[in-house]
Length: 341
Image (tube, rainbow, N blue to C red; front, side, top):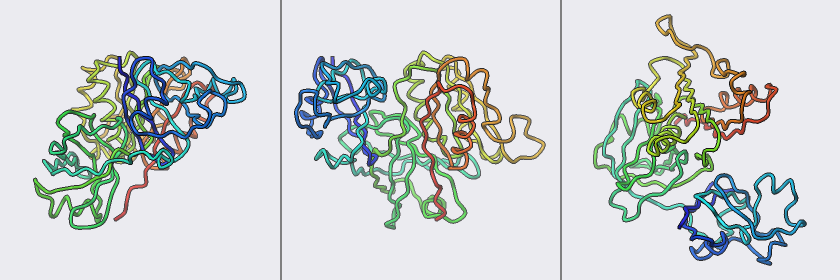
């Protein structure tokens, strides 16, 4: 049985390939043209060391000089000795260029729709079905889009899961004066060609083994829409999922019907919107997201927290976690700086 494997590198590139039953990770990578640095191939030199970020695996042999007991506890692996037992992802702390590997693809798509989902946010729908390949990416990753009529590029998280039709969505904040914002408002037409580079980024949904806490700030929601689409398509993940979504004003909340739909498709799904600055008409949670975390609930069992939003929000959540007495929560985060132009 084949397993799907993702290799993530320090330069943010991700490469995908299948691993056959009982095949070594290194052999599968080489068979697919990915030349992971190596030397001895005997589990001694640690040249091919990486870390398993999700999935199951077994190693044939590891010399104690190559990986310490602590390394093994941290799920560090040697590609030459690793046999993959499920779909999995591995991280290597060097650039993909060292592997003589193909870089992320340059893809051409056409605009199929622009949907304004709040006064400050739009969803750009792209159709990349003309590409003969199915675009592969991990839910949570992003693409770098070239704005038509200019050399400017902007990065946006995929707001949906991969699909055979290569139908793509991107949640985009509409700035008063920005290159992408002005294009979407002033001259974007259905049928326009947009080129983009993808997949990029090391923020993605790992194999779910614990309850999930998803924390989105503003258009950071985009990455989580892709993750939740993936979980919903699978009929759930076997663990509770709690989405926190923070914006400045109630009018900035978007895709609420889509989010509410996850409750019907994902067992144990909960949703908490939080508004930081709004009038008396808002009757829900106010303030900042960490103020509404339940320390007692989070302290009862291990959890994985995914965090995507502006740097101040990311730092506030990290500070809250650092101040807690428990240390069994694993944090994955991506903080973005929204372009001002």
